[in-house]
Image 1 (cartoon, helix red, strand yellow):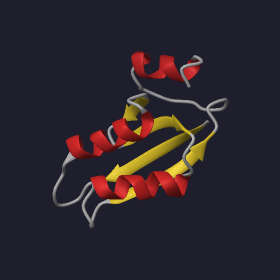
Image 2 (tube, helix red, strand yellow):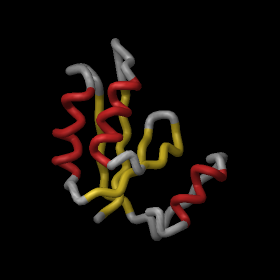
Image 3 (cartoon, helix red, strand yellow):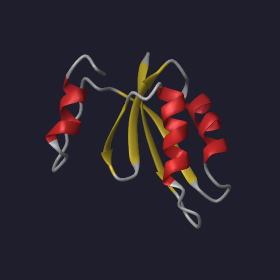
Image 4 (cartoon, rainbow, N blue to C red):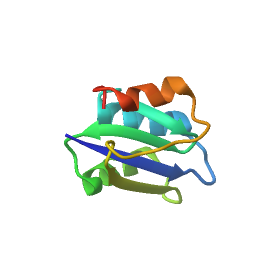
Length: 92
């Protein structure tokens, strides 16, 4: 399994609940949301598979960006500790 950063912009219709349903389905409800427009998930899917899966959870004018990330080397500033802690453990 690999870790992926999923960032997004919802434009005209901002259906955040629908997008989160897609993230839940994709990740088995195991994710961290360190910023307002980012989820970090761990999955066996590839970046392209994640993108294609989530396209059905957003509108045609929305933006999705998916990148494989290395959780062994990261840093944050002003992110709540309860969100940072899972990234430091074997949870991810």
